Image (cartoon, rainbow, N blue to C red; front, side, top):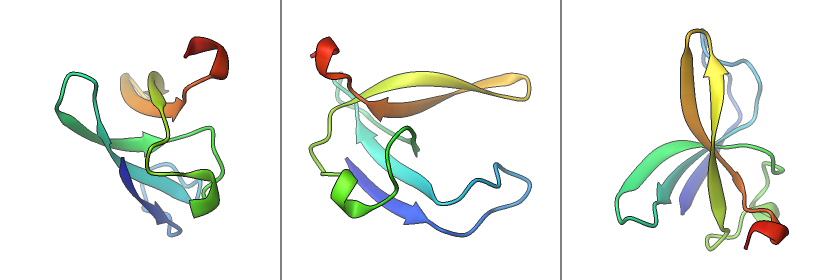
Length: 75
């Protein structure tokens, strides 16, 4: 995973800041650019080898793939 923490809101998108934008390597090999949610937006909480799982978040009439840290019990 590689990421950047965006501290500026980008209208008309979600005004919640900061936003973690990450390039996540999927188990199948390809990479997906998405957001990481459910974790503090600071580098100390985001090690590059952080294991993530996909979740789908509703935005209007769409469901967008976003990532959350993998729960200990799911490992």
